Image (tube, rainbow over all chains, first blue to last red; front, side, top):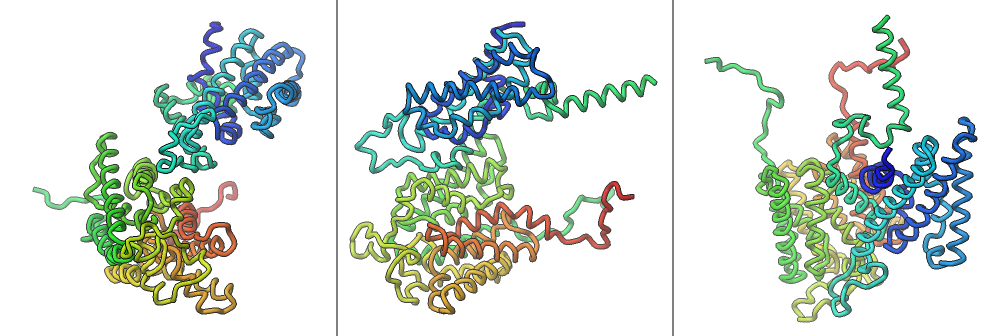
Length: 235
Length: 316
């Protein structure tokens, strides 16, 4: 198993936001500014790495029937930790993220990686997977947040981009800061990443190339069906 | 030689081509354009020409870059440009109008597959995007005839938000502040009737749309005919009802569907005008009903002759 691959796959190829489309709620809600994206991305990455490591360590002890509640308890513990740290040391970020900080607990990227990866792999691989996915999430948020802030407010990380002399003539497009603009920019970024990664539509690739195949119910079903029909054929 | 061969349907072809239809819509829009040039000055005509030119150019470039069939000769881009310009205030900065054209042609029309494939009316969507983006510039109205006095950009409120109303005759002939093409009711009615008499547009949707707003505002205003007439002639109601709620691609096909569409538009327009924070709701009502059109079409689809309802599975 190549450890480097576990790290890099989260950046583009299996990017949690832009390819597997997990964690849409924070992506659309907090990307009105690029600085929010960094704050949210860093917090989520911290939780993701820690929860992946903890769950990988505990995977033998967690009974299969109650694994999801157990994962959520572990994740919620780390979210409480990071929100207290942020509140104490960077209150500006804490205020900007607001309700979306505690909501990291139910961010499906984190639960998804716990279920899909950490519960099946060793600690080092899980930590690298968490770091890669977290950085991929941060990059995606940064891309969407930058586009929305530049076009919607005419600033980037709070720095004004339109010269003062031209501020009367050139006005930013407020719609980019509104929810409609968020969906639009996200769609454009996803399209761009698909183009760069040269991804084909699902019908052309089938289940084999799907990043979610490990946790997908329909894959199991079709595989079972295939096996059953094979058995019947053998009979 | 075998001269008998079977073609796939349709077997009956109309003499109407897209180009002819669009040309007639342009003709129908001309009276309103002439009147708005008279009311708001040469700027109105210039803005319309800029919008048409950029719509056509953008469609040409998109088709060129994506290697599609060149569709600018069907004139639909010109109609979109005209309708978009009619929905803008005269003194809107030109770059904003061009952004509107980009939204209408590239995002709403071409990305969904070109003419006939778009789910929403391009001009309406572009207007809403501009409204959401540049609320200040989009509601900066120019007083009628200010160009004659040489005063630049006299700002006055649209009748939907004003305290003192212009007389009804001025409302009818369009001597009021408002979007470029929506003010002159007389010219719009002339164009609308032309479309109805050439058979290009069925009167169902406009009648239902305007009728619903009329009935609702009549009772809401305490059976006041004056209030009702102002409601009908202000804002973009007539322009929207005749020219944008009758778009072929984005409205229902059946008569029943058209009635639902018109009444729905009227209800939403009335609700937004009276109870929401925005003064005008015609464009939003048409966009919302555009989104509902596939559903309306599904529920009002005519039954095929002799068709039997398929039995539900499992109950044999």
